[in-house]
Image 1 (cartoon, rainbow, N blue to C red):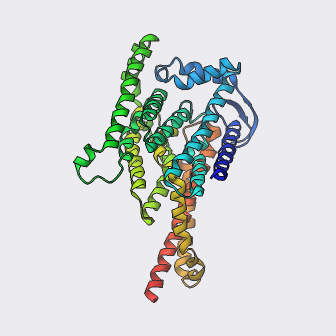
Image 2 (cartoon, one colour):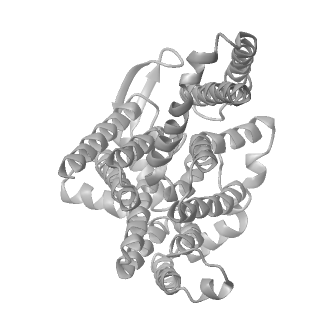
Length: 428
């Protein structure tokens, strides 16, 4: 076990460093970058002046002033170690990004017996769009990584039935970003120890009642703290005006024309597309245990709630906002992927056995896939125009294009396998 913990530390550290260098070369919250082409930078350096402006913005704007946790951590490191704001920001977010990956590993091991599946979950977490491009100027990640760590720890405490620690962690998560409240229905879903058959079993489930009570305790504590905090800083009227006149006016912004509407919809697919695909294929081909049914149900429930709220009250171009439901499934993506791969691997020999025998059908599938890939390429590079910094255009386009190519190739293979198996049964 120690061997795999060490491996998890190495993998998490490697990808954390890799994410840092990716953002060092892209327009991000902590770098200044100039380009000679749409892809390659000619000059980049860490920009403290810009980060100080970002920090000042987050401690003064009505939308962010009520989220002091990340700013407090940055200010503390800035003052205690006498480092610049940008270095404090990097220290906070990238150290916590590492710990978030380790928490994924610990949560996964609770229900996944294979250590390799837990390690694969770490890798898939870092390759998620909302993490891979987390700190770009377009995504503007500031509080999110802190929120992820606290929510992952909340889920871990629920698994261990440590309700006091859950309540404290969840309170801090809500203080970091109030969107953490959207996970409460999901927490109630994953708290069930068995599948309830009647409403009585739902209402009188002890673990669920405890989860509900400690969640309510966290919310009440947050409300008391928020009222005190806003009155103490004299921000009550500003926050009230912002919520009444600006916060829920973003639906028109997100769908104001075809370009913005397309970007808003593609942002959702970029963040959730691969994960939804894995879950769908896992449920389709595997025997899903009650534990995974709980977490998948919590994901779907949170997905519906969060997506509606993001489109109505935030700018969908900040695609990271769609990632919140993934907190319930990120720890298990490695297990889902291994099950899907095992099912495909079991029948992959049919391709080499029957491809030539059914050449006409096989060729039709190949040609169809090439046509679909060409259409996907045209869509990604000529129809989809990200409403973002132009230097990020092609990186986002390449990601969504590779996503489309993967889906097309995968389902082409599945079509061939299904066809060959059907004829194999007929002949036998």
